[in-house]
Length: 277
Image 1 (cartoon, one colour):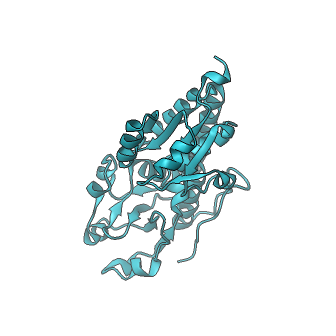
Image 2: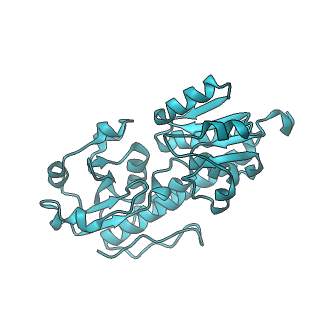
């Protein structure tokens, strides 16, 4: 097939597909992005057409896309409206590391870049394997409560739990990881304390984490380690989580486990988390 036979005008409603297309060298196909897009920085120069659960439908139609790509059941209403207006829409719903990798390959096939997609997935798998190997040298595996939101208190989604395990930690609520909806991962603060985590890693989507607030919860002052990883690095189910996100998790857990901070596996890319209490 020629390049003209693949979608040429793509709108990305979430950041991860935008990042994938840039990594594949296919960014010229992108005509619109989410206003929440931060990776790569140059993608922010593309027209902004949506938030996460809302979209500027008239603006999207003005861009004449031949494909709109979104993520999750939370964008179902956006997809329904666009389909009703005659737009081709593809919604992914990846929740695990394996599903993220499959999604990357699917996006690569959509734009005729399957070989580059396979190479990208291979690099990501190699990076994850290197981090897992580093984590095996930890003298202990810290227990981790990953806080996806604070009010109500929400435990981490599946790909985050899986990355914590690769990075050298033990998630405190593994039984909740497979639940797609955030409301099904709500936990009580007392239940968290009963699980006795060594560290709290918080990532409040689109909002700065208040560590003092976390420590003021009854019984939580005994938790010695509280850290933030920005949501753009860990809560986007795409390449960022499998590179920058897991590297930051690994750095935190190495510190908590009493190991030297591991070197960045992708030099120049990593932003170190705050390793102070």
